[in-house]
Length: 455
Image (cartoon, rainbow, N blue to C red):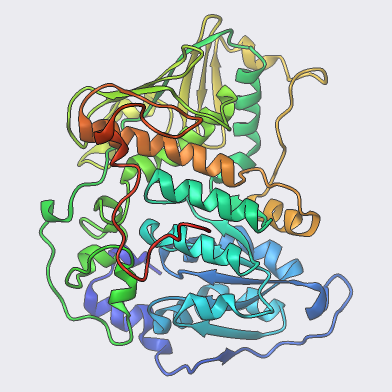
């Protein structure tokens, strides 16, 4: 089946949900509920639900399938378009549902889902502008959370998520899956153990920022029957419905519109910059300075950490998110869009997604020893979360880690908006004596969709 962003409106109706339009709520799938050898009974399994059932939720089937089929019940889903939710979840998640007790309910409003006593944890895969409030409400309802990246639309939202997780003692995993990839962990350990010497510079791709809605031409279309467009707009002021907004990458897609997303610097950048934070040992802090070469959505950005390390978003290939970046020949010689290049006084380490290289190669030929620093080991991101639901320990990409990595992305966006050098206090999470920069730490939110002052 082609990705949703490849479909026209007509084929989307015909192929994406039309075949399941007659299903009613709740939708039940037959399956046994008794425990069998190697299969826990319904009461022994963790009850999971999915909030936001679009492209990313569909992709996550491969990530959660083996874990859920073995020890979880996927019992509910929620989406502002229930018809789509029923179709997607039945098609992509049928085996997971059948592996549990077979009972599955779709809720148009996720707040109703959160009231369900059978739900222990929720996977939140909504667009960014709707993610923080869903995370906070889930914590308040006593649910553990796996939230896709980037966590939020603003730095203030991210800090509110952290407060909610810690106040309600929830288990929270951020969807930066490279934390559960062996080679990325090993690469970070090589850097942390000084194998390339003292790191002085880190280079990443030049991911672009999102732009205002008014920068794009979007075709006004009738809202799909049953889709709650007002709820989709969430904290933002509603605009006319358009597939060019609703679909993730459908020119421009909400990923590229600043009302709904921080852009590619937050989406792809959150993976790579999370690895940078990990390798530099700055999971609980961040840079202290940031500046953009000019006031522009695609400007190169530079950060400086307190220890002097400089992080650069360079034009090493076509900026990610602009025409031609996928075919750039330069990209073949650089770290992938999800990686980074670490330069130290003894060598260089190039971290890709799932692999790394060193120059000289002899650096990587000496394994990490028993007496070296070893980082948190997770070999499967969803399993790590489920294991921590049971143990009540912190996952590999917990709430503070997710927030701090996302903050680096947001700082780049703010630097591009101001077009000048900014000083950042990672403890107070403010720009000291800079009212303009501080004004971008949060945004006005529409009534009914506000982040609560007291989470």
